[in-house]
Image (cartoon, rainbow, N blue to C red; front, side):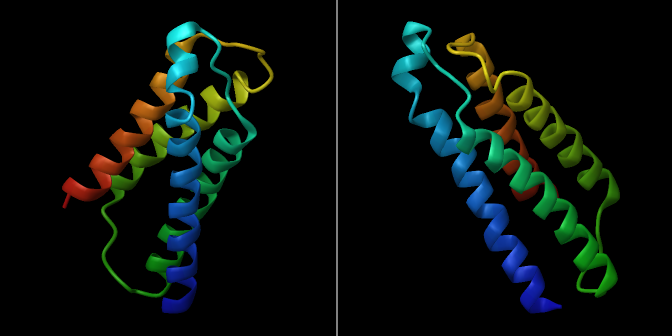
Length: 118
């Protein structure tokens, strides 16, 4: 179980890197209004959602730790918002720059919740 948890955690971080990397790579484009939701952002958001749910399931099933259900609900709500925003704006040539800012901000919010909510 511990090996599966670690594998899911690594994939979760890969999804995080895909989202934030995609947003940060387009900071200049955000200023000029040419920012787009890249496939990396979309796939990274799906990867984070799926691996996050998998992590909760593995931790619960393996009695590896106590899960704070309210914290998980908040993180799930934020991640679903990221996935929906990425999905709805995936085919737009140059969407509003605010969308990428919101996606990046919500992703950072999820990191803050994960780190500081104990």
